[in-house]
Amino acid sequence: EDQVTQSPEALRLQEGESSSLNCSYTVSGLRGLFWYRQDPGKGPEFLFTLYSAGEEKEKERLKATLTKKESFLHITAPKPEDSATYLCAVLIQGAQKLVFGQGTRLTINP
Amino acid sequence: KAGVTQTPRYLIKTRGQQVTLSCSPISGHRSVSWYQQTPGQGLQFLFEYFSETQRNKGNFPGRFSGRQFSNSRSEMNVSTLELGDSALYLCASSSSGQGYEQYFGPGTRLTVT
Image (cartoon, rainbow over all chains, first blue to last red; front, side, top):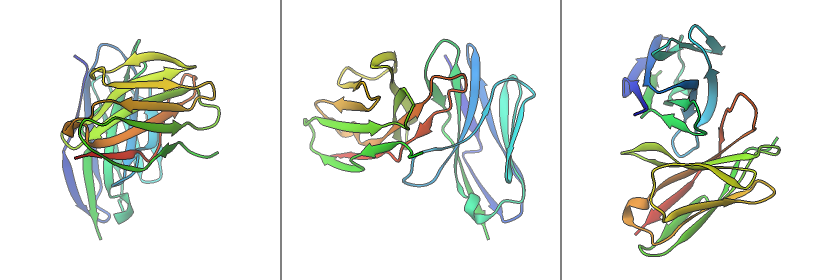
């Protein structure tokens, strides 16, 4: 069964303290891996798409990387406004749907 | 471009009733997907429509149905509501291109009492 697991479930950091979020996946065939950010009461906001192992994407303080088994979302020198739930999702070969992980709730304290 | 819009934003219904939610995709996007989000199960795929045809369906009972119109707008319907149907219902649209990035609307918060 296709499965996406994110860790940790929750992470609390001080402003400026860099860290990484993990997304591991077990799927029959990966067509793409997506990262989203979700603020309370809002829909997920698209961040990155990664297609093949070794690929990296960057946006401001965020960098996403992909291997054959997992993806990392690295956050460098975070600010309080980076506080949100970060969701990882995979697009399966032959299926027009995203399978989501449970998310990592990130809190950045000033 | 305007983003994905969903109406209504909030809804309170009684068990046994039915409900219809609406989604307008980003202009030019022909694919619309629906998801249910709950604290316990996270985001779960309901179904996806492309050019008025359902291309894929998740593991939800037949009480959940949807449709897409020729202008790509989509509706989902839930009949015979149950307490467990209380959730945030999210609509996402994408172009038919290789990227398949899905852009989400703000969601409809459904509460069943």
